[in-house]
Image (tube, rainbow, N blue to C red):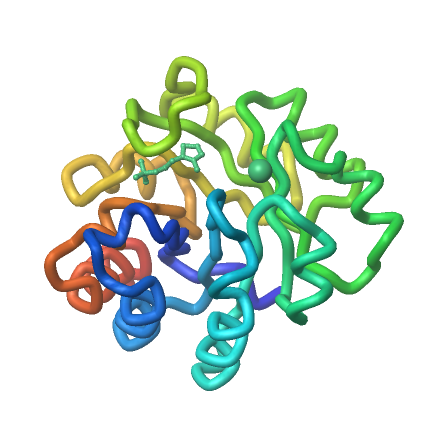
Length: 204
Ligand code: TZP
Ligand code: MG
């Protein structure tokens, strides 16, 4: 799967783009080398979907849409990312064999269940404290990454409060697809921030 080894997985949420157009922010992440991006628009999930598909296709980059398998199918995204309040992974997998299905998990049991139910990848989080998502519990920390990675075959991503100053802890724990909102989308120079973070994860 092309998800693997992406390095950085920018999650673009319009309200965290510092007043810039999410399309402009998207294009900057792609110029910076992102190979996979997620559109996460809680206010109006459809308004940018077609443009995100157009732009990601131009760069041959995977597009994942947050929350809704129906929108992912409608806009021909490569995948959908499902959280605990979305359609369960097993139900989503029944609807599509092709789509990448990502699942949010907080612990090993949830990770194993997501894999068994047909998830293509999991995202562990929140790793650290973050003000970006309000309805989350206490940070799960780095140790849970070390517990999960050896136990699952699907790619593992991590999210939540990850930035330049703590990313090395996540890399050292073995994550090769690090998901970020604000550290990328609120950076002054989004392209540069994306490139620098990718270089930290992918060391040739
Ligand atoms: N899920 C768990 S934490 C989080 C999501 C969507 C927010 C991550 O945002 P940031 O700005 O990278 O901390
Ligand atoms: Mg969700």
